[in-house]
Image 1 (cartoon, rainbow, N blue to C red):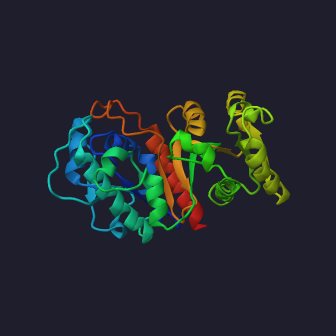
Image 2: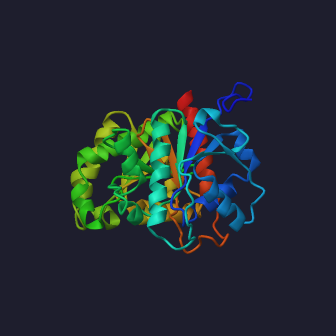
Image 3: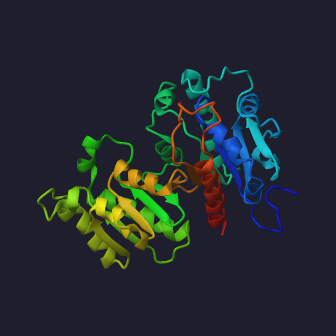
Length: 339
């Protein structure tokens, strides 16, 4: 039976870039792929080396896992853990001890997987966590996965959208210093991010008329100008324009009260102004099983909502929940794009 033929249902091929070899990426991937029900939803392909996977299989006492070595995605078997060997020579792996080797092979895995995503030989990509610092040392000039993918697909604007069931939290400004946030918030930028969010809720998540909330930038959403003018001069104007155009948009809400009072439950999506304003409440509410989705790309990319966790690497202690959810969401979104 071919990888995309299960009672004529489209089964997407989902690539997995392995992230930093010395982090928890391979561990959470292998733990996730132990779940047999996953294979009814997607066909996985890991971009790594069999030697690296065998190293962690042995370390994690999962030697029962078998890997199906393939040369290209079209050869993938839906019911096996497929591996495209993106390097073949032996590599010294030091779990929990970050070094240049981890960054080098994270870059090779990511670049090869993204090439297959661009040529549509895979239907989606899940990126395991990597060290941005170690990757930058390898000549990788992007702040993170999101910016790299946007450049690869020549997309000027995209959106970091954190997802856990019905909770969807996006950020206007992502990987920039906090001191630059206020000056970066313009009517144009917020409008672009809000439009991507609304379009994603409609197309990717199938919500025909999404209700969206915006948070303010300042404490108490500016307190009518007493604590800052961004709400009055920028955010309110965006909200008014979108409502005038027939969208269901409300705010700006004080971020602390909005998330603290369960107000967020009334909305299909939330647009926050900067990274930690959105991700701190999201990670608390999702309890470690949330997913990072890059909205606004022509292809599907998700990732677990955690980092390399070098302190846990090699100890068989990493929770695979977020990676499992990232794989399942990638499969679902790829199916939605196919319709």
